[in-house]
Every structure is written in C-alpha cells, then in structure tokens.
Length: 323
Image (cartoon, rainbow, N blue to C red):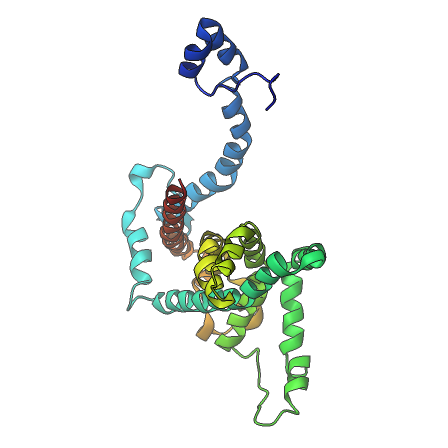
C-alpha cells in the first residue's frame, strides 16, 4: 500500500469514524453485492444436492421401505412411513454377535493397519520431497502424481500379476533361504492389506507433502540454533507442525478405504477376508436383501460421520489455538 492508495476500510463503523457519511457511502459502493456469494456457491450446492443428498435420501427410502408379495423391495419416499426397525436391524448386525460383526471388525482392523503402513511409508517420502529435495522437488512431485494417471483397476491387475504363483514376487523369494513362497492370492489378509496400502497411498502423499512444505523453515533453524539435535527438532517442531496435515491426509485416505470392496474382490475373493463394503455389494445385488444393503450403507455413513466430526473438531480447535 502506497501513500496514493486509499486507506482500507473493513466495516461501516470505521468508515463513518474516519470519513463521515461520504466514507460510509463509498464503503457500501465498494462492497460486493450480497447476491454475489450465493451465486458463487450455487454450483457447489447444486452438485452436492444432485450427487449426495438425493442419492442418500434414496438409500434412506430403500432402507425404510417395504416388500411386495414377490419379495421385491419398494422404497418409501415418505419419511413418516419409514420402517425404523429395519434400519435398527442393520445397526444391530454390526455389533458383537451380529451377522455382520466379523466383516465390520475386519474392516476396521484392515483400515487401521493399512493406514499405519501408509503413514510409515509416506511420511519419510513426503518429508524428503518437501524439505530436502532441493532442485529435484519438481521432478519428485511429478513422480508422486504419476499414480493418479493410471486407473486403480489397472494398478490392481498389475499387483495380481506380481503376486500370482508364477509371478515376479515368487521368482524373487524362491531362491532365498527360510522363505516359503506361497499362494498370495488365496485369501490372505496380508495380501489385502498390502493391496489397500498400494492403492491408497497416493492419496496420503500429497496432503502430507503440502503440510510439510508449509512449515516455516525459520522454526527449524531456531530450534537448531538453540542446540536441539535433528531428532528432537523433528519430534518437537516438525511433527507437531504437521499434525493437521496428518489428520487431513488420514481422513482423505481412510474414508474410501472403509467403503472399499473391489480390492478384496480382486486380491482375495475369500469369505475369510470380506469387508463391510463386500457385504453391502452382495446385499445390493440380491433382490430381497437390498433393504439390508441400504441399512448397512447408513451404518457405514454414520460411522464415518463420527470420524469426520472428530477431524472437524480437531481442525477447529487448532485454528482457535493459532488465533
């Protein structure tokens, strides 16, 4: 701002105090019209209504609907007439002792383990690209984006080729002592977890890179000037400063993992490794079980809403602490 620029006025009270009636008139004239913000937000609102609110209401209508004489599900569009007992049955089925308890338990365990492995693998990579890459940062960032250019299904098919009986993984492990190459695609939980890590780790890398790249380098330099070693600097400065990035990356990665079903279909197809997404898929493909499938969608959405509520609460709390 130079001496020739007009002073910035952020509210009418300030304008009145500094410039009188002329100032308040100029402030109102310079202020964007109120209709501008709803107009700019309308495409996103329409998109959200068309592709989330309406489909989710259809799921609720199916879950609370009825069956005709041929056991065909009929959605009930009137919320007053919804059968809440069917939705409650879906919630009871994922509790201990319920029919879907094991798929729900496996889903949580698989996602937690896969997410932990993603963090262990992705954090050093993102840290190196953000803080240590130097002139090679652009090239390395391009390589991080490369997996998004390849369809997820194609990457899983490549994973299948690597893990099949005569694949490259067994060819490498076969000469090693004390290693017994086995059927990786015969319904093993470890294969499914590695598939989740392989498929979703790109979603974790970019938010982590963005969070680590935004850390002010002067904080790290000040820590070292105070005589704190690199390890303590990382634990006391870098890691806390990247906490919100870790939460955001975890949310972006975990949400699609919880609803995943095609990774299990491609890498296992065993009832021993079925996740809740597979139960939903199987139920929705059967006529009389579509109501149960819709109820399980509501169960999964409720569970994920709780996780997202914690993420939003944590983000809001961190923003208030900064202020």
